[in-house]
Length: 178
Image (cartoon, rainbow, N blue to C red; front, side, top):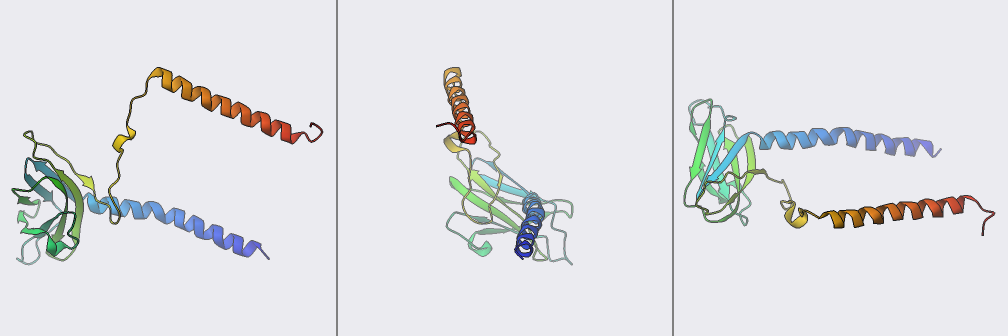
């Protein structure tokens, strides 16, 4: 009797595991529809995902700061270019993290990416896929080059732990020992 619920739960798990790569690929594909770059205090976006729709233009792009949530709250500019490539530019953008979203004239969102603007004198290109919800994560302070002594000490601890675990499990497997 208990096998039916167990099979149902395992079937749902398998289905979720099969759908997860498709969902992750769809989010990556939508973010890949635009290319965002910065140069000093200027942010630009380029896309080829917005075909012209009966003379109404290609669409628009919005630059949102961290406190703005909807497309219309940001600095909205009209896309210009050709049917092969469209672009938009914002100048005098302050230092910070922004989200660039492109919406085609037919209402379809071509993509959304986060960009970090720094007023450095050298041009920088920085664009990452924007999370749909939550915060952007990164390596932060997790990238540290450890020396040979630290790695040897860590390796020794791992080996000692593995040997101790094997010894305890071996002793528990023989009930005649005290």
